[in-house]
Image (cartoon, rainbow, N blue to C red; front, top):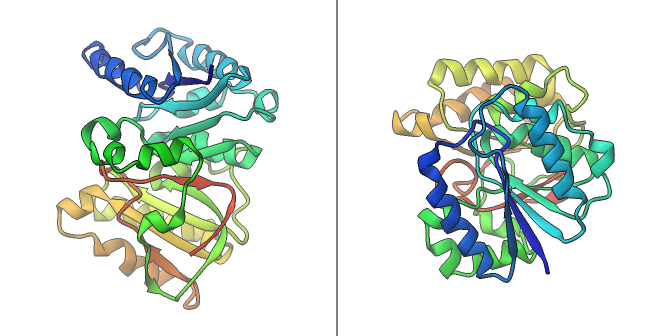
Length: 273
């Protein structure tokens, strides 16, 4: 039997969300998966990061577990990452899926050679089209295509390299740690949920001062939800065009970020746009 695990490595879920977890387990069971649910989805006791890391290691090292879906978000994913022995799971064939704060774990896994996919499976409950169109089946089959991202270029006409990144704020939590990826020749993926123009500009400036824009082959922008709600989504492109090398390609996709229509993108492997 092929298994899937449902975990939460970031902020604990509220008890009231557990019926939704049951619905998600039922959905995945319909694809022939035996679903195991983390014991720590709502746990708030001290030592949570270590307990979650130990459980996650067990899922990675179970040869029957092919998919590990993280359904959480928030701030605490790096407390799991700090307790995760990546050497123990390096040879795992399981794919880990998550987004937002899980950018920390996804990036570390991709750097470690594990299968890491920026995708929030619980969107399938809020957006039935992901199921009805057959897209979730494609994801489960590992048929993740950059063609599904509908990328458009705002500077340049193409870029290639391994993709690293995700949520801008959460990616920068890895700065100065052993889990920071080698971005030389990579495509830097950036998106955001919260953040007014001043905060987003500040975080982009941190990227500039770290020299990231001189290392990468291109920048792929997902959605920045709060900026869009304010009608100021152009802040990101405008600032990047100001501070990045003139020959650095910049592209956008509406299908990476916090919208329920978001698609999947695998990190750490070479792609071409």
